[in-house]
Length: 331
Ligand code: IYR
Image (cartoon, rainbow, N blue to C red; front, side, top):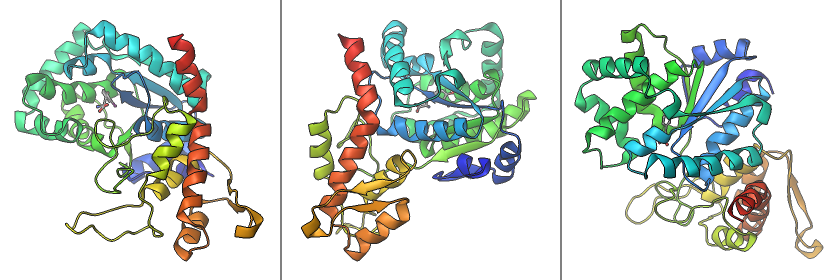
């Protein structure tokens, strides 16, 4: 797979395609980042962007993970000390998940975001941005609760991070896109360069296939799940034999979350997927890509129950090292 393909595969949006093509021409030594508000346990949402970081490392880029402690503080996730303790656990899980230790730099936001120059630039950005604009940038991240000044400062700081970490590429879930658009618009006003961004999709809720999978509502899969938890959760997933389910009775759009997990979590990390079946049910099935598996689910060759069992096995393999690490840290 060439560098451009590694950078863009499974991305929902690339801003702009020309800029990312330029970057893919000479990826060695270029710096890409994702920022995360620290939380003690990684879940599939974190791992989706981590998969992209692993792609980028394979393409030759250096990766910066911003442990966004000051951002989590603005978002009232605890005291800075508490937030930093959970960030250390997060770091260990990312490495256990498969990021290349030699090419991953972890940076605490608070190590540069309280510096005088950063603060001065932040105030300049505050002058240059309307409250409405900042609120809109934050809406996807924070939902309806953007009533505090801290919620308006947050996207402005995220904008400045791109400059202060000396980056060539910003990566994030689609929920970060409005902040990245704000950055594209505002950084030039401070005489800073615009950088491209790559956005990963937001996956659907596991049990309904509607809306988005999130850690606060519905079922999410995390580094804490045991093999049994995983089996139970995946077995309860919505999995009609199609990639394009009909909307529900109220007209809500639906996805097939089992197929999404194969596409965005399993196939990017494994060369092949084997569905184990007894001979009397046709024997094992082997897939080298997502398309083959999705087509067999649609034709009826692959039964949803077998797809789910296989998905649980592969997810278990992906999270096992992080689960082990968490256990060690807690003992
Ligand atoms: N807004 C992110 C956290 C975050 C991301 C970046 I990229 C930053 O520079 C700072 C914070 C979230 O929603 O988790």
